Length: 211
Image (cartoon, rainbow, N blue to C red; front, side, top):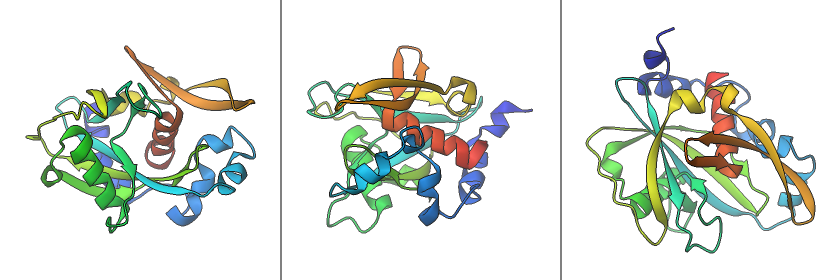
């Protein structure tokens, strides 16, 4: 197998347009950490869900595509220091999840939307903290500049798509949260510990596009 071609941005774009599994409006039950935590979706549904969107930015490279991730600043009240996709809440003036994800990427890491081609979505991801998250798939053209917003992001880095889509790198872990044991995916990469919502969305990406 030519790994660089298999995990290229062009291949990613084609796979995003021809995803495996159920249609998006039905597929949210098939993916996510809730499969590791029976009853968690029902608990989340009892909350007033807040709509959010994240951008999954894939950039091409000679040795295969890379995914842009951020490390949230430790100054934030929620999820401080965690590894995340650019993203945030969908504002009333946002006309779609795509618009929200692109806006958040510009605000957080200075990614100019003129370099970004949205190529699809993953099923909505329901978090235990009451968010309904729409992951927006995208291909980023080279020539962009990253300017992290220090109020939101400490670091911006790239991870090979081939690493993230290798199920051997998808580990399961658990911890006690609000009095209950919660199970989740972990994908350690060098000095970065990718886990929780971000790892759960990446696992969904694998299941829908590369499994």
